[in-house]
Image 1 (tube, helix red, strand yellow):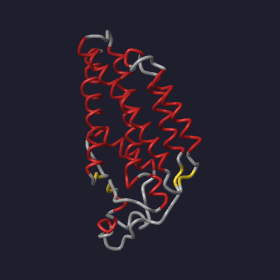
Image 2 (image 1 turned 60 degrees about the vertical axis):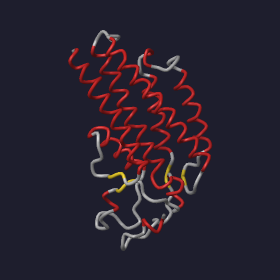
Image 3 (image 1 turned 180 degrees about the vertical axis):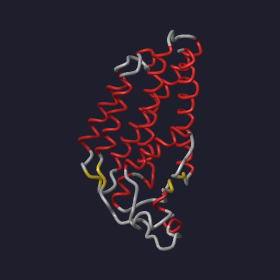
Image 4 (image 1 turned 135 degrees about the horizontal axis):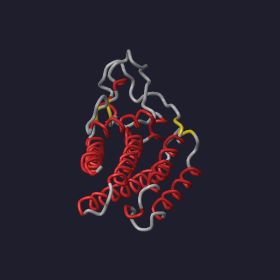
Length: 225
């Protein structure tokens, strides 16, 4: 697999090892949990505190189990991170489905609470898919930090022109968060292209959640106002 990615002349593959801090991803999960707590109780799966509390327990466990700097592969940490990310994603999709149901059935009397709930769901969608991209690209942050990168899942502009960045450039968490922001606002890739079926599938799911949130919920709420 690695030999396929090394076909690009003049660029070493994989890049040299470089450690990466874990705190931006942990902070993103904490913010996403806070956004879920701010949602109306009717949009939560079960008691409004239950899922955020479980997510917080997982996050605390990951915080103590993960070194400050990722320098090599952490299989258990990555499995826990993927599980937590999937858990938050599922809770957010449930909230979107519930909000759409109340909208279509007339369960929301005013437009303002609907707009607030839609914005919270959209922000959670944006944050959590930044985590997805960070975790899936090239086998995850641990493999990238160790220099054992798999085949790239995303083609960043810096990877296609050596005049932009040095040959050893590799994306960081904020790069993936930016990809998530552009995909959530444009409903499609912009400057960073998905290369693998996994990346295309995850970006497609995010676009679908985002377009439903913006197109169906927020637009309808504006009409109500």
